[in-house]
Image 1 (tube, rainbow, N blue to C red):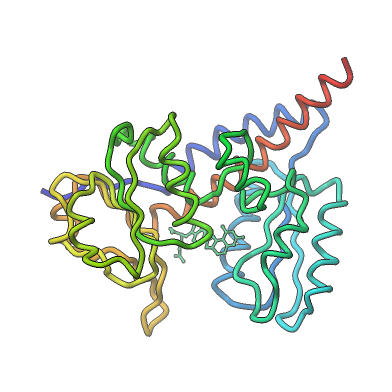
Image 2: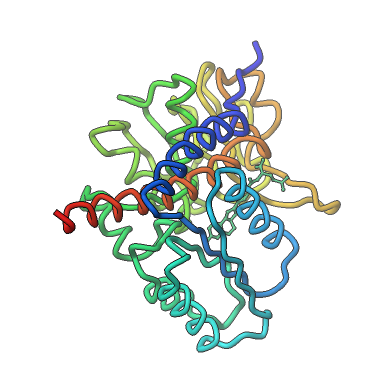
Length: 291
Ligand SMILES: Nc1nc(=O)c2c([nH]1)NC[C@@H]1CN(c3ccc(C(=O)N[C@@H](CCC(=O)O)C(=O)O)cc3)C=[N+]21
């Protein structure tokens, strides 16, 4: 048996086509959602991702604002651009591309962002809203994982999900999403300090591997019929992406999200969803205040 593919590219395309309609409706009300990005430094990988986000915006009819600073930028210079994006009415949502250069206080930058313009769902207020079950922008990669499973009919309700990783963008927020009543999964969170990872993995109906350790999840760790999502990004000596999931897992699992082509495109689509939903919330609020 070979696993079925959780096709992130096709699913992201379907989400973008839905967003195109919603963006047109907002524009008809005089609101043009616009995504801002701030890239600090000239890492080619980061630049490639940022360019992709602007292509996505053009595809759905959204505006986009691209800001860049050299890798030598100071904390104050970065904070100045954040304040400008907070004040710019054309920028209805934005991200600060992570990681920021060494020596920069990332948490201070994230806290300075206007939480209503936080397209990543990583502002402390929005992470707090997630904990409190209040509406707000959701962290893009975790929500991308949930949407990818849902759109392929993989049962989340009652499933045992093992999340491997404890990073701020995926590992920490994903269990918060999965344990909401609306998802209703049971989650075990593992990380590089977990004793006998294989023992935990073998119990899982769904595995989400986001540790950044090449081929961490091996075929013998996977229960036959499980769904395995590869979110790890490492690069080999030729610069090719190597995921956290060993290719042999395809012969054991029922579902596999490949990397590339799985969760990455979903992350980008969710970023657009967050910006459109924030604009829709703002439109609804101004309609109420206009009476
Ligand atoms: N503030 C912030 N928000 C982020 O969401 C964020 C970030 N910083 N820093 C970097 C990571 C990485 N990330 C990716 C998004 C899409 C793909 C993606 O679409 N990848 C394609 C192609 C990959 C390739 O071929 O290079 C795929 O998986 O098929 C990958 C990686 C968002 N990140």
